[in-house]
Image 1 (tube, rainbow, N blue to C red):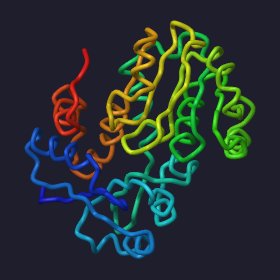
Image 2 (image 1 turned 180 degrees about the vertical axis):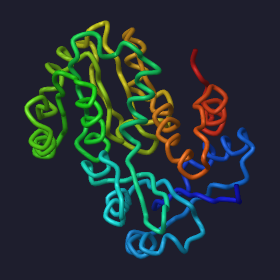
Image 3 (image 1 turned 90 degrees about the vertical axis):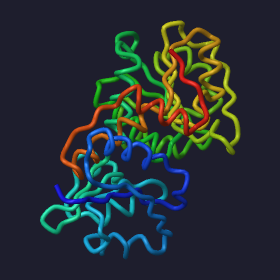
Image 4 (image 1 turned 180 degrees about the horizontal axis):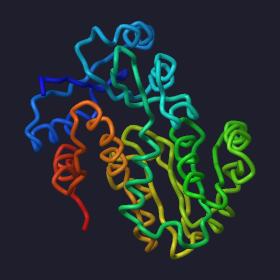
Length: 281
């Protein structure tokens, strides 16, 4: 295989841990290649993607705020990207720009790994937020047959848009209704940026939740968010956001470099060292 380069496209993009992940796999699998950061301002993204075949990259990951623009630039899209109208993984084939959305895969792969029986109880989920991440997570939960999904957002109309889009099993709720929804839920997912370093805290009372419930926070900086710390103190099962980051990277690496990599404890340790965090058993 000739030397290949891929990248992550975003603005800003300096914070992205994707190069750590892909360079680890390139080294581990002894593949000649590299993975870089490509900062592209919003007013340049359409032109950059239109001429992607001349960029020298065989493919790319796409992060905020460009996932919708990436989808619009595709000649071929997978079913998930087509439904969500957002793509986070791109590759070239026969001169065409292809794309897919691996956020759904990454979310479910890590949830299955960290909490294998997560949907064996009451099978009701509570999703906090109503942005792009929340839409991908709602899609994933519907795909797994979750009986009811409560989308809770501080701006109720945004949650209502998601509920109307996904159908009768998805219910929009105001933030004031959260305690009631927590009593019902067997899975809580934070799909907001609240609790992330530099963002406001996510302060909610988890006492109403069942002792068998699982709490998943897609934020991974810090790794132990206040939400996860509160859930752990309450005795609930917790799932951090780092696993989703690792798993969503797998399909792209396979497309670009021809080998399907493994998410491992070694890779997690590399990321934890970079984050300055300590892993838990």
